[in-house]
Length: 111
Image 1 (cartoon, rainbow, N blue to C red):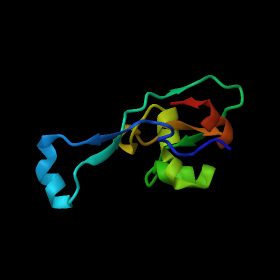
Image 2 (cartoon, rainbow, N blue to C red):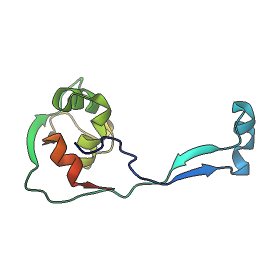
Image 3 (tube, one colour):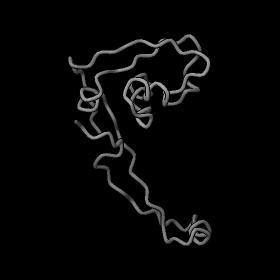
Image 4 (cartoon, one colour):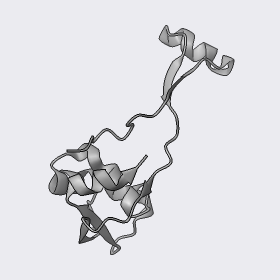
């Protein structure tokens, strides 16, 4: 099974910007670890199928990820696949697609 870690092999930068010196002091650290921004693209894969879901009151990406993937932390796959980064970008009644199976989806995502 492909890795479910959305950070993958991304570079980790240490932010020691002076602008944040007070924050560092308050936290007792010398810097903050940050992942570099990923550029993600979903390749065309004949192995990916989708199931439709009509967005309704009470829906959340994490709930759909739990239901379809068994892991709520994979909510970002549904958001990414539908090009709607947050639930605020989904209007009630919108049909979103849940890509499946999980192995095929993770294999098709290039970071």
